[in-house]
Length: 254
Image (tube, rainbow, N blue to C red; front, side, top):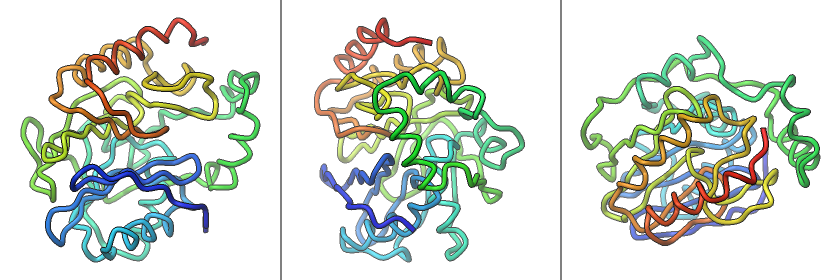
């Protein structure tokens, strides 16, 4: 189990938790919580610690939302579900991925494409320690109803951002003006030399062109903060964030 330090950034009712190489988001509504993503398999206990640090308990979680079913986003959720029964919701296209009917994830064959990057060897060592090779799946995964705010604490609105995986979804938390962007748009990563809004480097994205196109949906979102899947919070317009990411893509290498 991980015992890494937690860094928590709060905007109104919404909290970005950063722990090692993983981020997740907690959204409050009164005494209830929604959890968005959950880090690596070793982060299950860290998610529960973060919930306690903002004054709640795991019993306050009414729903878990998933941006996409990569190991660094669902591993901690899978661990928590061994101890607690929680509803897990995501884009309909992502459900079979979360159930591991197929897998769209960086595998051993593509790892050499990353190792030349500064920071990548240490990142690989760290994430293996966090359980990246253990695998995880969510047989409890269910599809949310598309096209409207979800009936979960925070009245969160899904933003289809397919591309990083076929069913990737970002989420708008309207009361806070925050977009939980998952891996559609990040602000840093151990394998990147860039800072600020950016794409993950190419080997991480299932469909590169679709990942780019998906940012149009984020640019159109009425929000002033991004809580990304990797990196620190970003404050500014969504249009500016998308423009910065696209301007930096020329420095991304396949």
